[in-house]
Amino acid sequence: MTRILSAATISCLLVLSVITTSGILGNGSVANAFSIRDDKPHFGPNTHFDKRNVGTCPAQNFLTAPNVKGAKTILDITYLAQNDEDSGIGAYWALDRIHEHLTVWQFPNGTFYAVKQYDGIFITPQGATDPAGTTTQTESSFGTMVGGYTATFTGSFTPGTQPVRGNIGTFNYGGTASDVLLNSYGTQKGDTTPYDFMTAYFTNVGNSFNQPHWGWAYKLDPMFESSTSANQWCNYNTPDGGNSGNIKT
Image 1 (cartoon, rainbow, N blue to C red):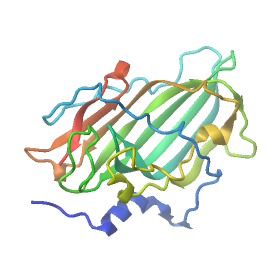
Image 2 (cartoon, helix red, strand yellow):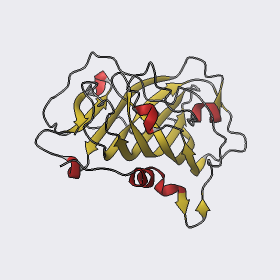
Image 3 (cartoon, rainbow, N blue to C red):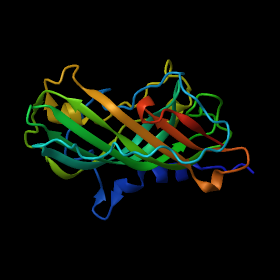
Image 4 (cartoon, rainbow, N blue to C red):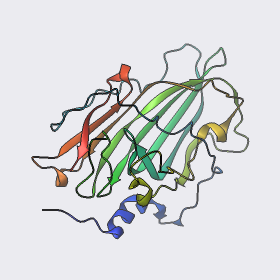
């Protein structure tokens, strides 16, 4: 039986944390910064996909502090990202609501090392392309996602008066279900107001930003699981396990 997620339900799932006991939050204490650098990478077709319900994704042991003598923590912040269009094979496939935790260290040689952890939910609308890029969703559904990446870069740490510890607020990335339903990077706009910590806190980075490790694990909510569904999508860099599985109702 097809389950229908109303617009109100989807809205509540994506913006639940905007409303707190203190009222409606703004865009956070840090000004919005725009860059593609903080987006998940887009992925090519050179991956493998399991047409069955998949098991457990690879461990995310790379999301740890660096083992470098003299490394100094210079930035340790959390924030909530809402309406973040999630990239798959060939198209954005879902809207995410994610709690993000970012820690940046500076090594004695001046290089920066970042670990960014994600913990949230995804919603994929009926008619959207699945993350593996093989078909379209037969119904709207949602589930959980966890993951993150490590990054190295050079430049200058220039926080100004911005907080370098604690929660910095909520950011609406501006993604929409209607954009997701265009089903192709060629026609989709993606996030229109993404927050990028690199632009907000660093200068003179140039092309030095590199992501050696990344991976996200997605699990379809049990209410949508069936004998024909694909319940887990493992979206990883090749050295960290590669892509496998799918989210498909």
